[in-house]
Image 1: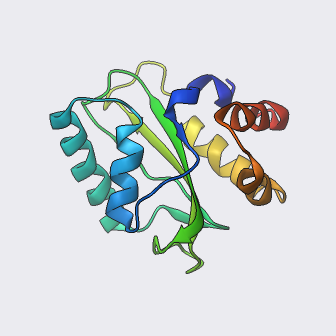
Image 2: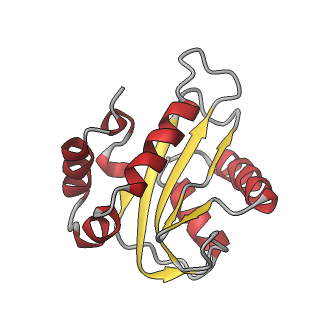
Length: 150
């Protein structure tokens, strides 16, 4: 399983505009191109998950994730906010990189946790935050995933 296989260039936004946690979550959800009702339901689910504890894992990275009936298969999106945002991360530092993961409640392929794990593993590599800041296009993001073999 390659992480790259789950991403598509149209679900990558390198210039997030939101100035709050809610704004950024909504922008990430919009990348999945769902209908308005589904977007609203997904936002509520992600907020509920964030209320349990921030998905900001440190080093400028957050992985908001949940299971929801609004998707029929695992979906992912990536967003970058260069200047960072207070996401209540575990290291209390601003978050620049957001990996959104949404999976259906029952998933035959059971890829939700492996994908979450692979993103966390990718995020721990020493050069990843600076490389993510440097990418200039969705294609470069995809190339970085491929290069790292995650």
